[in-house]
Length: 328
Image: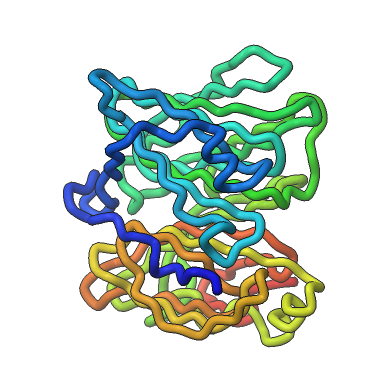
């Protein structure tokens, strides 16, 4: 049986950068070699290489939050990367699929290298001081037919940088030559829902040829999102019959535990019906069906979401509360 998502260890909320974002992770051993990551996560998935700082102290933290090895997923991986001091540097490499860098807080310089080209500076990613202000542009990366791609992240401006890296092997197309990169500004944040269902949703345009859809949702204390259910029973039946595909992941920030009520089906065939505590810094694989998210009575809830698949394409209308705003 697949290990339930609540086994993902929460990150303590103390000493946060913006009062809510979880504290830096602590790693006491040397970073694993890239080969170790490849063996643990499968061929074609992201491999990480990291550089130790002065006196053997690691100025970075890398955590694999979600993967097919431990969660009901088949193609998606979600990593959290934290760069905490000036010498911090982390590199990620992959040869297939699609990767996406989603900055939470702080700045990092991005250098890209392909197998047939010298390294080049792609720009700086991130810049916001809190997840409760509008997001900064994201970076999409797809390797080309000539081989893999390496992305090196180096801390910028001295302040800590915290970002998510999501990868999928289910890229709809492979770009020619040296691959493709795409910087994307956010859509304007829009209010969605009425009354108890009010929240603010920001999503990013998915360019042609890319498969990952990402965005973020903010809701006030006690508010509810992702309800009524995103998918109809027919959508779930089609997934069960392997006529469609669907994977979705959340990363959550909340000062007090929130609640999720899950009722649906994963692409692995695992059906779930449960109520789950959502802790600060936790990540969760979400089923196709219902996954109602309710903030604690005395705490706002922020969560990043990312999905890939053919079962649904989410579209939001101002003032709607999910009913009739999803199209196939």
